[in-house]
Image: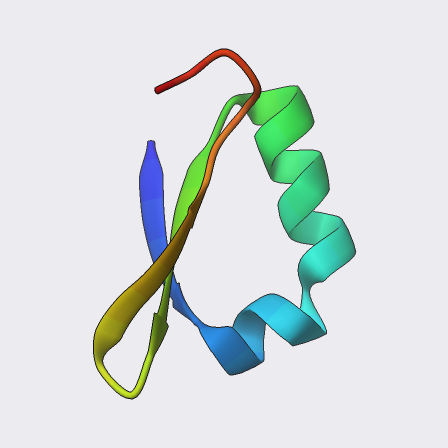
Length: 46
């Protein structure tokens, strides 16, 4: 499941986000000022 979060929220919750990615297989799109800037997903997922 992909979640969209702000860059500020990503900074605050980075450790929790990494755990969600590793153990739950979740993916995150990070936005800054309304524009997508990064996508974080488990290794091996395009």
